[in-house]
Image 1 (cartoon, rainbow over the protein chains, first blue to last red):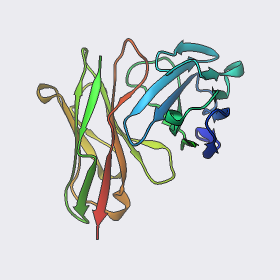
Image 2: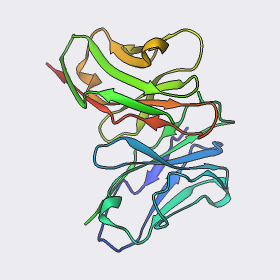
Image 3: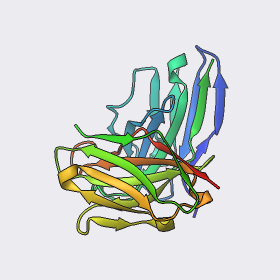
Image 4: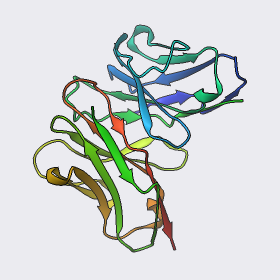
Length: 116
Length: 114
């Protein structure tokens, strides 16, 4: 069974440009999460989808970030326009079933975004 | 609000030596605790988790962790380090209510010397 897949693995863009990151969760996983790790700091929660609905987007840093999950399958995270402080590694994770606190989340390998 | 502190951003041990990676948490409710590992160019992989029950939790690759409520700790140990254990390790906490996501520590990079 395929794991969580993220595209691209690396992206280098100029300040002011737009970048779209994609995440394909494990098939059948209703829960999809985006996290971000900036400059070797802690991995921080961005948002949580349940199917196609945004359950919690309290971690989104500002309105330059837009996440979508069409049809409850794959998800995209668009940054427009990108700023230098957006550089970091963006992780996607998915999990199955109702949240219990002890639910295991499966992570993708991350997209390393560099804004120059 | 919940938080996680990992003491030591870098830990170096000799092959065969004890591995001890420290994690302390704060949570307003009984926590669920996790250790994830990230090998180079790979995603995060679950090593082990504590939900309820036995406080000593065994995970993959010979790792284990003990939940100590009085110390608010969930330290990760392995009796004998192997070269293949070199990776970055993340402690995380979640709660059964509220935000349905993980709160991570800043990570500890483990180096294993031959």
